[in-house]
Length: 624
Image 1 (tube, rainbow, N blue to C red):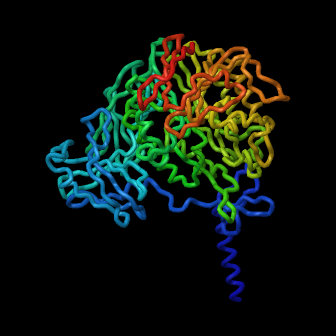
Image 2: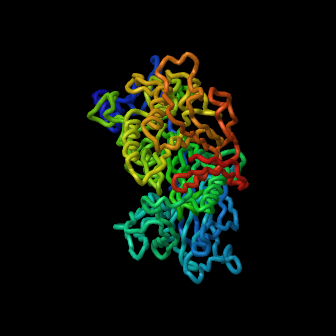
Image 3: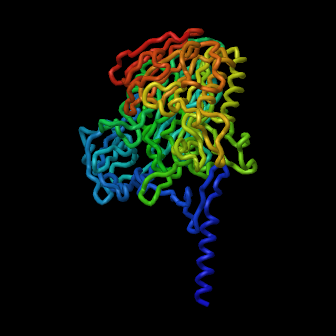
């Protein structure tokens, strides 16, 4: 009897464990859950289990659970070992407020206690916290090896005893600016009803929350507006400028870059996930040059994680690096391969065997987290569901394109942002058994959306110039010749869906993509790409060789020339130049950190490229 009861109990818990697991999308192959609810990839009779990152960092942990004390504040970082450097933030006293660090303290058993009464007594109180009744403390967490992990903020009121109050730890950020509207958003450390005042109107939160977003309307084209964000007893004031009036052909500047994942050199070059040193300088340079917006297309962070929460920490570090300038001008963000987030399958020796995008796609995928962390237009395609390869039309088999494929306009320019790392399975180039998206491949529904969007913009009399941006170059030049849209000339590389390859290989798909830009549009100036950590440009012409030897498929008709401008030089470790079929057409190759600035004056566009670290001009090209 006891054996029967034990068996029934075991069966109950096994059934419950299986019932709790998410549905495996039919687009994948050879993935299953075992009797204990553990996900595995099976190949040749061997099971390789998905392993989770040990002790991942979280934003909640690094915010430090602050508790006010008689003399200041104490914080708890869990099991973390290292140091905390801290100082006051002069909100309202500087246009780009940053912490002015004063002291460093060792984390002891995961905790710190700060005596702010002594640390910031006369003459070190330069923010007048005693008169104002509150202060904002910026702090920087580093691990035992000195690697910077997180920049945080804690706000306190009183002179002692103190009280913790809400602080803005991300933002406020300006996004989706048009000629008559804008979106402003931020995140606070504690739930609070916040509000924004702009153009004589007040927009309020409906309830206490930590994520605040206000859709501003009723603005006038080409106009500067001050805005004031109030939260609790505090407020911050900045300004934005609406885009030029449609059809005006008013001159403006915009910037472009990609690839800012953390690099060697220590310090701010390696804040967990991001090269904050170069990003901060790049944003400052763009602001000084009065750029209307910045387009940044992929590889903001190191990524390639199986922990959603640690990836969130890396995204936060990237956002913080440019926050002082994002208060004023919008940054539009696209996805790259390093934004990969998913399940990593390893063998019993710990060697990786496969890596696929996480599911359920609505909450756990790389695309879902990206949409949570950034604010972009929502005018792209829905997903790759219901394409001709969809194995299960009644269920969701692919992640959403929401906020990772979109377009926007600024003056007489349209920018189309694509995702060439959609549903990305980093192992698919060599391990096809799981199925998944291929690095560099633009899938069917996205390609059709591009065609339809270009057709609509071609008819728009207010648009003279169109740029299309995706992370991967059509023609790699240094660092990614073995993938991107080339794969060393191997057209066999392609996505797999439900265990089967799609019809078109990578080079065929590259040509279909280019055909749309060249032969179905007259307004496309060129592609803005990254992935390769260098700056260069080329002009695709009829005489530029673009195929491997004995290529058997239909070849592209280059009826007019377009540019490929690659700028993956926003701080990631550099790649040198390689010899490829089109190398003689590659111009201005540089491994300096670079920001491309596009000066648009009616029908004319001039690109100037600067090193944001040294401020020297690298290049100047008249595109139109």
